Amino acid sequence: MAFGILTALDPNFLLMAFLVAILSGVIKGAIGFGMPLVMMSGLSTFLDPKLALAGLIAPIVFSNALQAFRTGVGPAVEATRLAWRYMLIVCIAIFLAAQFVPSIPSTAFYFVLGVPVLVLSLIQLIGLRLTIPMQHRRWAEWVIGLISGILGGLAGTWGPTTVLYLLAIDMPKMRQVVVQGMIYGLGSITLLLAHLRSGLLNAETIPFSLALLPTALIGMWVGFRIQDKLDQEKFRTLTLLVLVVAALNLLRKGFVS
Image 1 (cartoon, rainbow, N blue to C red):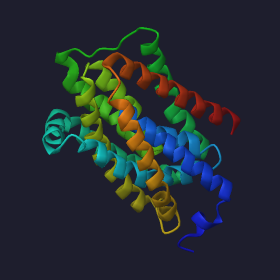
Image 2 (cartoon, rainbow, N blue to C red):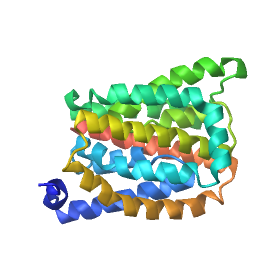
Image 3 (cartoon, one colour):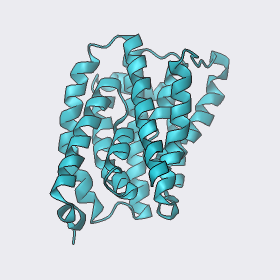
Image 4 (tube, one colour):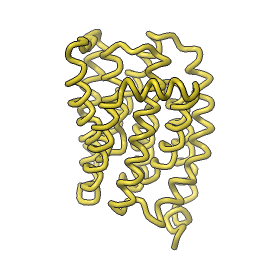
């Protein structure tokens, strides 16, 4: 039964899962985040949300490592120095929150993630640009990191609030992508360990997650080509639009479930 879920899936569902993985990879490569949000949103359209959450773990672990070290070890080390507090609280919160996943109703995932992402993204898209002054950045790191980690542990994605934080401190595009890669990389390893402990990742769900990895990485390679051509303002706008669309889809499913 080691491949039970993978072999029992309708072939059409499996093909749709591969397509979702490719799309999530393109978005991840282009704007530096969005893979877990898009995969969770897309896969849970036709799969149980908890299986969708298990499925995205292998792709995010490998894609985040690729993103973090794409420009070399030096920038990755510098990113860790800049955001170590944020990374620390995110990882702790992910591990603790993930232990509650097996007991949470599936439909709750949609609202936990969709509502805050939608509200914060729309605020910025309509022109209300959130900024965090230098003197408040230390406490903001801890508070927003805690919120991000809780969302990550419960719904598998801490990218939206992380991106909104990095936009609020006006971090340049290329540095933002590397910092995101390190935050997501450490967080995704924590999520993997947490769900090995929670039981969500097991002998049946791990093969499904690994099966989605190659297509996700192909999509990410395409996304990297797109990212290299985006200027800072287009990068910011595209990032927020992706957040809004994904959040609306999550809320739609929450209401119809």
